[in-house]
Length: 119
Image (cartoon, rainbow, N blue to C red; front, side, top):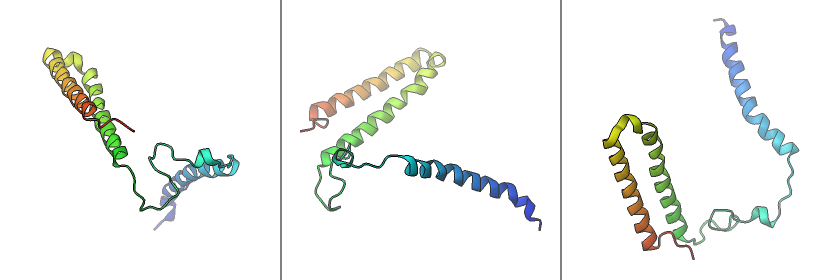
């Protein structure tokens, strides 16, 4: 068995690992590392990052996060619809309006129920 056949695959793996690790290593070595209270404070996480893992937290944060993902994914479906709108014709346009109406009704319902309120 000739090992020269495996040289391109080995080089591919080595270059891939180097491209993945080198920027991180360079950033770690050359980048400033001056942590302070502002950098260590919770940012969009809802609770302190350096406390007990079994601490109580507000479930409303996760409700808002799930609703954001839900509505974000639903609006992502509008992009392919908008691209193909000319080929879909009037029927496709009406179906898209129905989708937007259901999305709006769901958003207004969540708003009225107070799911988006943060105290």
